[in-house]
Length: 600
Image 1 (tube, rainbow, N blue to C red):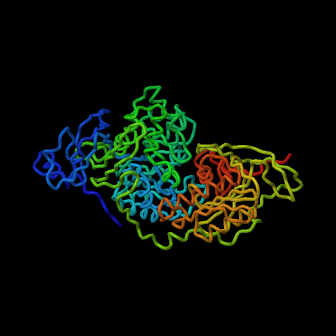
Image 2: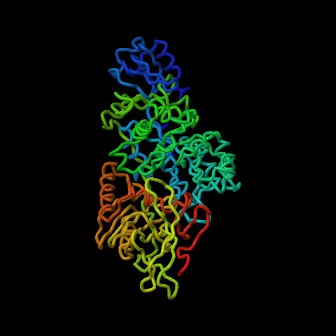
């Protein structure tokens, strides 16, 4: 197992003590800055930070007594010194990047700590995939902690994954050096009903004194929610309104409020703090899912903090939600999250606490980025060949694989339709009257076809249904092997021949995202690692992703971050209606329902 572990506090404590006492010069001193203390919520001008062995030894008005001739001095020039930003819950794979390239993309934005749940790759490569992500994470110059995925499949009996995670897998992973806890427990009905497998996974994490991540995607805040909380999850990021945030914190959970590429859930929840006055230390900021375009063009946790401030949050409170609150939640308050002695020297210099320009980033005592440019290497793991060959269709697909037969003699049918909701993870369960032509049910107006193509075992299976909300027009199709969480292949289109072209193209390139219109490929993002990630630089992946977005628009789509909506249409643990390799799933009842409900 590859390791590049940061030295522990006991290993360097004697050095820190000597520096703080003035008996040894610091390796680095940040001089003349304004100290933002997230413990006390104070702004203290004219302070220095003395650093040794990658950790903070001293913070005070004058570090000259521990400054020697060999000490590197960084002139803060009055700028604010804030802790490196922490992302409390996120999936690296959603950036279409490996851990190394994800780190390279976010370090210039001031993110120095991430708590990652690689359940995407767990569904494709199992425990080995988790280990590969974990190992590359430990190689990076910033802190990337891994949560062991808990739910692969996310909804047993309603989907088939490439691999299944077991309680034994969870117990094994708890001994790995970079594992910080159990990933989001998405099977909330299983926990609420006392499912032995889910409880065994939670118990394995708790016996290891690790944090159990939550995922409660139901609006029901009654007995089912109470039973879920009693089962052990310590946080939740699925809240979408103020009542959700209040309910979670009242029950002792941390409310994680997210701003990802497509999820805008901070504004609707932060009023629990800004208007209701709840204790802000129980609220945490995160991204959950950010694609490469967002990372390159808009930012990462700096974007989230700025957004929270724009929503009325005090800047110091917002910073606490992205630093010390997160560290405390994961039991790392003595390790990171603040600029105080003993902590990792993860420091940002910024000239404005509201706009938050990231002017200099120090991680583990080293300058890692300045003025938007990265200054360090982010090492890559040698990914095995079998991790790059994961798209198995069984046979070349044709337009007949995407046909939906109508009942004999029907001219129209009533169909259950997945309704996409802009900027939110939940969908709507819709019903629509659809026409029949030559014995096949056709999309109509805004309603087009969606297919889930099995790609792990080469069964040749294709599940067909209907989806509304993308606005596509003309003969087109979009296919993606990023299909949370089972990560088969999602194909959405207005023309069955184009759908077959798109699916076969992804099999040819080993995974990714493609868009076809009138027989021509408009955009392609190759994601050869597990069909989820590229090990190319984020700027290159983002450029291809931008062409993908432009191609979606050219095909009539007007949704904000529609790709994220596309990729979540198979996530059978978020209401109301989803598609899986086993059929159309009503997530409010956790049962399969027919695509064609009735005929007039």
